[in-house]
Amino acid sequence: MTYVFLYLIGLLLIWYVYKVGWLAALKTVISIIVPSFLIILFNAKAGRLLFKSPVIGIVSALPTSIFIFRGSKPLVTLINNWIETKFNFIDSQKEVIDTESYPVDD
Image (cartoon, rainbow, N blue to C red; front, side):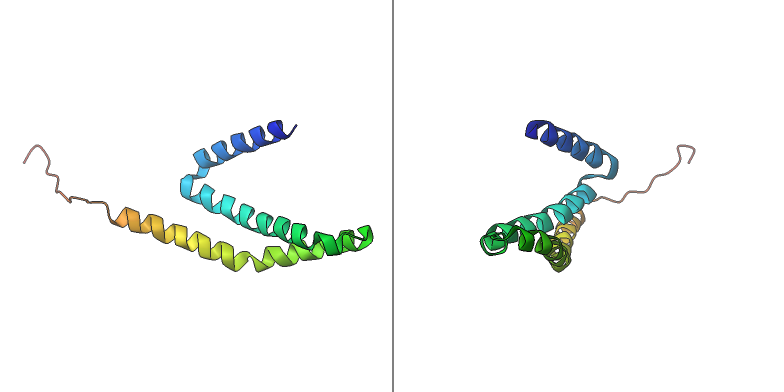
């Protein structure tokens, strides 16, 4: 079942890259992956303390997830801005030769 889920996610990513382009898709994926990774990391580290009692774990899971999600916004913005400047720097480095075009009749 996990393979089917990952397969569907892969197809959705391919379709999304086709629809909006690499840069926008990369920014979107990063804005999803970074907070998710931080939430999972926090729950793995703090799980020993929080989840000894299931009631405390269930009650604290949603508020901590929202807090970590909102707290990771500056990090996501920093990464997205770095990607944007990196790709803009590469685009500005391309050698472009400006030419003028004249109609054939002249």
